[in-house]
Image (cartoon, rainbow, N blue to C red; front, side):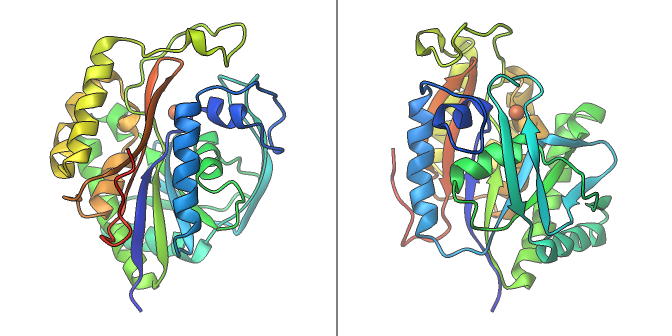
Length: 300
Ligand SMILES: [Fe+2]
């Protein structure tokens, strides 16, 4: 049977969200915070529990590679992930499994399309916190294998336009590999929307009286994008991403969103919106794209 993409999820990765949940894997303790995003994530996690899928493929901005696109290439990774900016919030003991077969299939298909690629086979490699935060919040039981794809830094080495082209090509290659694999796959695009952030932290990080969007123009841009997502205008969204990325210093610079939309074939159906909230001033949206009309929902 042909493989397929059964869902695409936009899954932001502020470590604050895992911190606020107090899972046993994290060493820090919080009194809560950022409930709009966390409750939205919990709702999406319940949808995923009822979805038949084999593996989660996550594209992360925090595994940055300057020569080509890399894929996790060993079946098991276990270590402690410490956020370099927020070690006070995130010291997470992870133990995860990788679908190496699918990773290699995507690697080979991308290479055949002329994209520079590499398999990560260092057993001591530390998996980035973007992967861990997004995967933990979408599937807190970690009972499915994952594949992580690195972010080749085209935006910074060349431009946001080059990144858009390169990550769209990567999305097409990954889709082909998934279809040939016979597997049911959830794609995860791990990042915030607008990404201007405060440079100081409240004495109590989860003090919600201190949390708000960094500025109004970032808010207006984010709302415009979400409106287009509701209207199913994903090709148009991807077309304006270079300007959006520049205007709001958005984390779409990593290429993940373009990769996911290209793999999904630029949906013309409405996105499922689960929640929008700022974290240290950045704009964060939890959303998904369900290709199956029978299970697609109007959430918010
Ligand atoms: Fe990030």
